[in-house]
Image: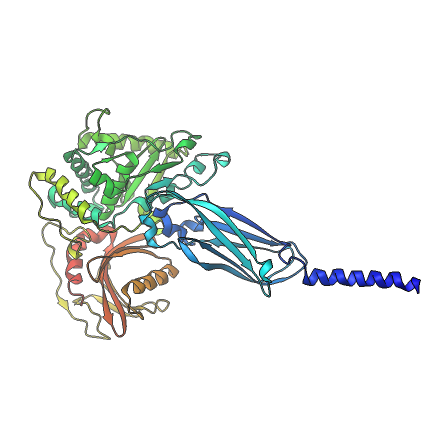
Length: 547
């Protein structure tokens, strides 16, 4: 009997241990979670962080790396996150059907912050919460984790998210330089208004053809420089741009936005450069930014030719006198010669930022609202342009959405209503091409109308929603699937303006949202940026027929 008692007790204990292993153990103990995160989020670039296709998906909030170190197969493994105060609902990053022993799954978080994040003016410490569940998981076994990160103020640019001890070269110290285009804001209503005022008052409206003529593009840069001289704009120094390889103190810089440079009548080198880039883009030019150790200066690209101007030549208190526009251009071109030589020799300190190219890759600018007070300040400053008071600033409207050619009127096409297919809500010039439902993969695109030379296009979208904002959101999402990014904002009433980036080009457009067949119809009319100015009168005439 005693001989049987010991084996029996051993068996009972073994069974108890086995049962405890299944019923009483911590089921999450063999799932290992590792978080790879960034330290800062810049509100100005929030649309980049939200888009896994933007800039090859390299700008994310965090990666959750989950490894199964157990002999068990975990089914329906779900990784979710939320950011209190910004993204309050649990948002699923990934759902893995089965996570086998030794297997690892990686979920990357591209957070979709609301546009209102660009109203954030100060830096703050925030946290992200992570929750991991799986099939039949007990509540006590749910994996919960959190980590801290900082959200910068709207005006703050962080040059790199790489920690100082990991920086190994200039590519690291400027790893975020591709986000500079997010601070170039040609769609800002105030920038569009300022551009129009400068064209009318300083350039006297003689700027037709500027987009593809090097001589006229150079004249535009010089006249823009003269506009800053006329208002006695002050150069505030070059602080912030990293000068040395180990210049960690310059990792972050607070920039005035282009609108703030204009209305504050002062700017540092990077701020002036982004003002020039914004105005040039709004006028239909192709802007570039040149970054060198401790400095930045602006320019344009025309037919693969590069031009530059030293915007800081305006001088300032304690800095010295002001250079003329010709001198500023000469200085810029000499700097550009040195830049090209250094870049060709492979010097990583010399970086060119092609604004529109990066726009097309997903680095799209932040959206900003109109401000009547700041418009008034532009009016006051613009009195210096011709010593005559401007008429009161008009509210945003189609005539000021993009620069209107102020020269000899080109021949105007004859307009006729659409006569085939469903009504398209826009008059169509004789000889133009209309395609009904041109993209099978984009069913909400009802029609596309093109000029014979293919430099102007009108698009008609019919979206099954009664909310214009939701309609634009659906269009934005579906175009993203086609490899295109759009940035837009609503103006007065039902008017919309925006840019579409993709396939190596940028399209400027204006449009309207209309109720149609229990939904919303969006009709837009635009042109590639290099042709927009020459086509602006025809575009405006077409815009006025939308109904």
